Length: 363
Ligand code: V47
Image (tube, rainbow, N blue to C red; front, side, top):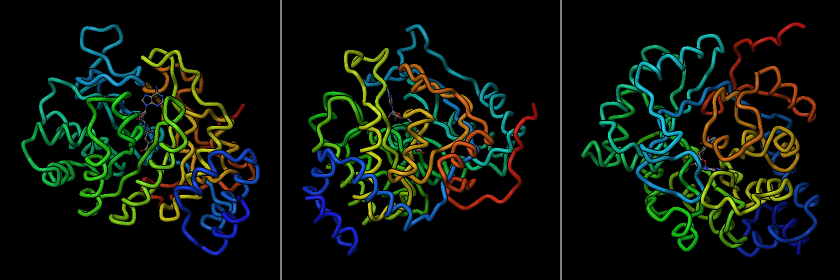
């Protein structure tokens, strides 16, 4: 079976749902990884991308409850927090020292922040850090912000863009298959709505990333279905810069009885995504979720990007992640170099950043 798939890849023939299932189940992961690696090298040679960035989560108070999430809280729960604009600006001050190229901002669906809070957050950050790309909000947040603004999705995106938003994040995709989606995030927007919002963003010239949360109750079929929905949307709107499989972390969630994915599943998801997504340029292995070691290995299993310096991460760490919260730029580069790849600092849109990189601390 793999022979036929390999031939298809070599001749540039598009893989099918059934091919995706074979790739998800065949025990020869090394061979599948090798196939994904060849595709990755054809696209990107020896380059492996990273971004100097900072994540800011403005609040974890959320009107929705998703079973896989340890981050979202009701206001009265332990661990609930909300940042003021001043606190957000203070956190972002770290951007000056790090010389970061990107701020990545997401949060819960806060029941009380007014629409203007989000606009002020964007414009305040843009005014303070005009050279830093604001990658902000998931499609789920955009849907909610459109409700608050009373504007259409397009109108909301244009309004937020005017305030400073430059691209959208990929969170909130979870698993698109309705049966699983209904179980793990019943109140979240549908797959169709998620794609509609990304499609509108792409149409007005914004770029976005997209994700898949794996390693919980989804089946192989659900994963392949998910990836192919991304491929279909990309055929239509073309604005996804990267696909990011997100490894489920069970601790402190309503699914804490599940074991979570292993390294083999992590690598397989990367490889299968690389092979099926013939129209998405980048496959990101998010080191925060898979750990630094698997992220490094994944650079030979189809991934060409390991995300960034991050600085402060709550979503996965509240769900038991044991990876650090922050990796310095020199450490990211060393990790990539030791994997035999060439580290390339990129901006949010995958332009290479040529400005001098931070030097490792002496000592
Ligand atoms: O939307 C929530 C997921 C996402 C858990 O766009 C969990 O470049 C694992 O989307 N275990 C937020 N995952 C993170 C995210 C992201 C990260 C890095 C880069 C980009 C990008 C996007 O994390 C959520 C949800 O899908 N998530 N809880 C959990 N327990």
